[in-house]
Image (tube, rainbow, N blue to C red; front, side):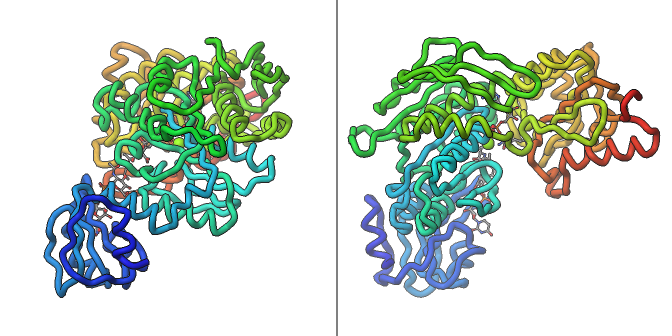
Length: 499
Ligand SMILES: CC(=O)N[C@H]1[C@@H](OP(=O)(O)OP(=O)(O)OC[C@H]2O[C@@H](n3ccc(=O)[nH]c3=O)[C@H](O)[C@@H]2O)O[C@H](CO)[C@@H](O)[C@@H]1O[C@H](C)C(=O)N[C@@H](C)C(=O)N[C@H](CCC(=O)O)C(=O)O
Ligand SMILES: Nc1ncnc2c1ncn2[C@@H]1O[C@H](COP(=O)(O)OP(=O)(O)OP(=O)(O)O)[C@@H](O)[C@H]1O
Ligand SMILES: N[C@H](CCC[C@H](N)C(=O)O)C(=O)O
Ligand SMILES: [Mg+2]
C-alpha cells in the first residue's frame, strides 16, 4: 500500500518529505522493522520509541510516524500526529483491510471470567460448525493453531494483523478478551464489535486506573464503542450481568440492544433451581423463548454466570439453543481455572488463576461447599500490580482457609518480602504461614495435607513461569504439585489411601 493512500485514513497530520513509498508493514518496535516498514514512535512507560527512529531507518524503514520531529537521514517522510497510538490503530485497521468488518466479533470485558467465558463461547461456535478465532490471556488461537501472546489484549498492530490472518484462513467468528488497559490505551480502536459482554466488576488494577470509578469507566468504553446506528443486518448487542450494579451504568453508555443475564435479579436470560455438586452443576435455563434443563461439568456459582454470559452472547449471534445446550453439556474447564491435579493422592489439589480478592473468594467459597476437611490455600500477589488488593486477598485467604500460606506470585521488580508484608498487614494477629519461595510453599501444603483435605494453589493458573526481578524462571504450579506429591510419597509413603 502506498503511504499517501494510507494517510487518507488520518485526519490531522503534517508530513515532512515528498516521497510516496510503498509501505510493506507497520511496526512499533524498531527491532522488527524491515525494508519498507512504516515505523510508529510510541512513548511507552519504560522507553520512548522516538529514540529508536534512526535505528528503524537503518533497518530499512520507509517512513516514520511520530508525535514530534525526529532526526532522520535523507528525505525519509516523517508524519507528525497528535497521538501516535491512536493513529497507529487507525492505520493498522486500514492496512490490513478492515478485517473486523468481515468478521462476527464478540468482545468480553470484566474483572474476572473473561478467559473462561471466551473459551465457552468458542466451544459453542465450534459446535455450530463455525471457523473460530480467539484472542486472550492464554494465547491467540486461529482455528486449532495457537500463537503466543504477551498481553491479554494485544496492541492494535498485532490485533489487526491477527484478524487479517483469521480472514485469510476463512474464520467467520472471533471472540476476544478486552482488558480495561486495552480500552483505556485505545488498543481496540478500529475493532468493529458485534457483541460486547460484561462479566463483573470488582477490585483490580487500581495501580493503573486509580479509582474504581475510573476502572468502571474504562470497561464502559467497550459498550460506548458499539456504534450508535442501528443496522438490521448487523445488529449490535450489549450482554450485561444483571446481578452486577455496574451494568446499570453500562446500559446508559450504549445504544446497542441490551440483553441481561443473571441469577438473582429479574433478567432476560436466567439460571434457576441451581444444584451444585463436587462434580458438576445443574440448573434451569430461562430464556424469553422457553426454559431448558442444563447440565455441565463445571462447578461454582461464578461458572453459572460465565455460562449464562456465553449462552446469551451466542444466542444473539444466531446460534440455536439446541446447539448451545449440546456444547455446554460437554464443556471442559480451561487450563489453570479450577483445574484438579490427580496423582492418586488422598486429598484434593486445585490449581486456580484467582488473583483478585473477589475471584479468590469465589473459588474458596465454592471449595467450602464441598470439602468437610481442612482447606489449604497457597496464595501470593503479583509485583508491579495494584498493591491495595494485597491485604484484601490475605483477608479472604484467612477467612476461608484453615491453613493460609502466603507466598510469592510474580514479584517482578518488587522485593518479594515487601509484597508479603503488604499481605500480612491485612491479617495482623491471625493464623497464617508466610513462605516466600513458592515451590517450598506448595511442598509445605502437600506435606501437611491429610486425607480428605483440599489445597487450592491460586494466582498463577496456566502460567509456566515466575518473574523475579528482571529474570524469568520456568515455574508451573501443576508440575510442582505433581513433583511434590510423588516425592513425598516415595520418601514417606505419604498421600496413599489411609495415610
Ligand atoms: C503498562 C503497559 O501496558 N505496558 C505495555 C506497553 O509497554 P511499555 O509502555 O513499557 O513499552 P516500552 O518498552 O516503554 O516501549 C515503548 C515503545 O518503544 C519501542 N521500542 C522499545 C525498545 C526498542 O529497542 N525499540 C523500540 O522501538 C516499543 O516497541 C514501544 O513501541 O506496551 C507493550 C507493547 O504493546 C505492552 O506489552 C506493555 O504491556 C505490559 C507487558 C503489561 O504488563 N501490561 C499490563 C499492565 C496490561 O496491559 N495488562 C492488561 C490486562 C491484564 C488482565 O487483567 O487480563 C492486558 O491486556 O494484558
Ligand atoms: N465470573 C466470575 N466471577 C468471579 N470470579 C471468577 C469468575 N470466573 C472465573 N473466576 C475466577 O477468576 C479466575 C480467573 O478467571 P479467568 O481467567 O476466566 O478471568 P479473566 O477475567 O480472564 O482474568 P484476567 O484479567 O487475568 O485475564 C478463575 O481462576 C476463577 O478463580
Ligand atoms: N492479567 C493480570 C494477571 C495477573 C496474574 C498474576 N499471576 C500476576 O502475575 O500478578 C495482570 O497482569 O495483572
Ligand atoms: Mg483472561
